[in-house]
Length: 384
Ligand code: NAD
Ligand code: MG
Image (tube, rainbow, N blue to C red; front, side, top):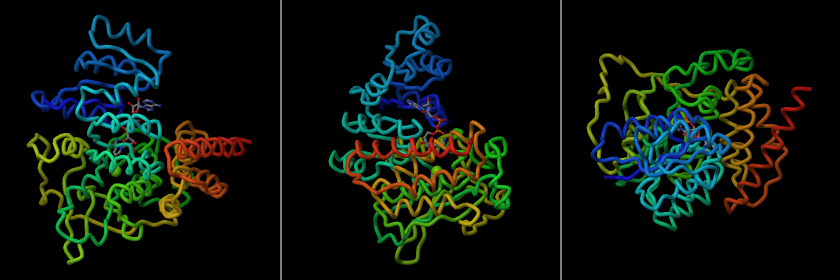
């Protein structure tokens, strides 16, 4: 039995991880869950999977949560300390890191320090804190398995036998791939939350529509695979069948193909190095017919360029980009700004940033807090 804790079990990745656990009840045991504030779903999951311990981040909801759990014997913890205790549960073998945003940083570090393998979905943590986190992974010799579909595809396509020339990240293009710059700029949350191929949490769905997500993933790939930015590119592939590719020096290119379904990369990370059979639909190329590709248009999608430039600038610039993006993305979802203003806000914060050192998680958190304050100040000016 592999014992698993899921940080962020009520989110899109967390729920799909639990589905995979249900497929393999003899091999995967859920021993810990954490959730932010959706107490109804967290209680339902706890009663169903009966983990040893559950942590609710929003401690104000403890009494209601306890009532929902009834006589369920699972130990309940609350607040950030509770989440961290579950993230580093000593009886577990593997943590699924599926909290969204930089809130996932401390839980990831706790899991690493407790000696757990990490199935890692939370890209914002690597974007903001790639250098210190990967340093810790190397120092501890930890197992750190990518879950993001593009990075899982690259990992699956690395045969370890040749010089890698470049990485190519595929990208569905989101709901506005054919829209004009003006339509993209004015887009509302209702238009934006209709992703054509993937069903995901709201924040990442917005990031996919601006292509900020692809920019964040380029930075994530830089850290995960120790690859210079010049050797990482993105290509629009609207069918979402090829999930990313590795180009080798001999002219060969290896890629991973499947219908888009996050349960596949989640399962791959949970069982690595084994590939286990499941009931996911095999690919039917006759049904698919054709696969298309084109270069992303950075004029219409300037967030992609902005993210790559922040990555190349290094230091805490990616942390500033990601922290400001979290704030303006949430403001967009709340109806305060239009989609195009996400770029305006993040670019304004980045241009005001004076580069400082970025070697420790504390320095990253400081830069992130500064970026959030700046982004809030920028938002207030827009309301005026
Ligand atoms: P989501 O918003 O659906 O879920 C986020 C989870 O984190 C929830 O359980 C929430 O309660 C918890 N959470 C949020 N803030 C918290 C806090 N401050 N403290 C404790 N818990 C908190 O997000 P998601 O779509 O599942 O994405 C999770 C991560 O995985 C993100 O970093 C995202 O970029 C990445 N990712 C998601 C997908 C996808 O298909 N959804 C694909 C690739 C990568
Ligand atoms: Mg992805």
